[in-house]
Amino acid sequence: MIYGIGCDLCAIQRTEKSLRGAHGATFAKRVYGDAEQAALQLPWVQPPTKTQRQSAAANFAAKEAFLKAAGRGLGGFDLADVQALRRKSGAPYYVLSGSAAAWMEENGLIAYLTLTHEGDTAMAVCLLEKR
Image 1 (cartoon, helix red, strand yellow):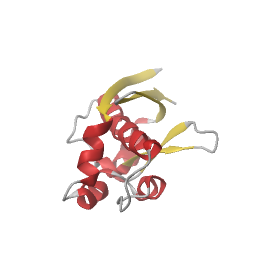
Image 2: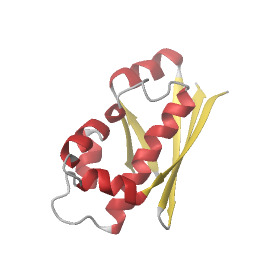
Image 3: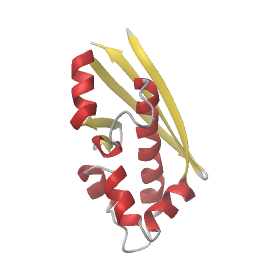
């Protein structure tokens, strides 16, 4: 049974600006979990590649999509506890920790994720399903 569906669009340039700004390292730690930071090579010392820029924005959209599917809003969980990672095949998946993982377990939910990007925008869709 479907518990919730969420989607989000994210401007790639906006995410890049946040990550490359004066407080980029702080933003990265607050928003991206350790595994995401490693995958995205955050904080960015060198100019990011196109793939890094797209992935950072898609990951941010994945967090927002999860929050929408959960019906919790921005205050529901720490963003860094909702990580979007990629399998070797490139397929995205969630890794949850902290209160997000506990909430998922308490509610018997499984999270599914899909990501895409085109031009200046990245998009994520999250589906939460009852086990």
